[in-house]
Image (cartoon, rainbow, N blue to C red; front, side, top):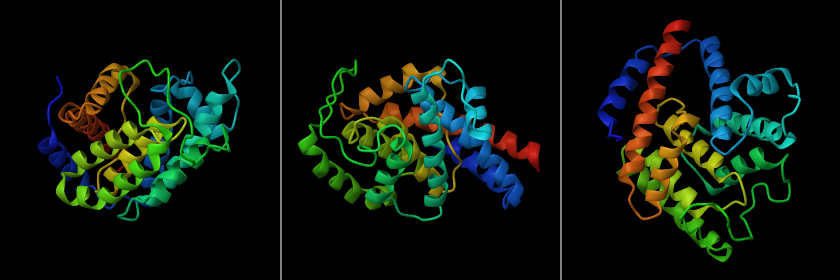
Length: 248
């Protein structure tokens, strides 16, 4: 169903690069747009009930949406704070364990301060999938091994393959008690931004395909997921180009 779109990705990247450098105001508007879009979509994939307009109101106006769980509000606020950190991290070319923990801490701190930025001490149960997540005692070693491999992966892989693999490996370790999917998508986007690509959105409408592709990675089949992400990147590139043309 999903195909490898690396060549198309590279062509669209060049089209986008042709508009650079963008003005400070254009960059600000684009960043604000994607802060809301990524916060909404990433949270919605995990069951957050806020729609796009409600997410925008919470982040821009600081209002509370009547009838919506407070946890949903806190997830929106926390994700936006993590997004701001993502933009700062994108200015470097490294990804560290401290970066990953900090992204989780920013997202999760208002929800559960004791577990924010800390690896889980309990097993993951009741996920409704066939993914076998590591036991808590295994997490530290698996994360250290993961972090150690990142520089070489970055050298050997296409940037989009690298971003997809970071996402997949991290999710399969599932180091935090909650928020792993959100952090994985931030981590994926960090790798894309560092490589000169734009923010990539995984819309809730393709959630079933996304989960199916992730489940395949737990069985060491990464091709489907990499192809899926390459198509999500392409669709996001098309949207990004449309936005740029409307602003410049």
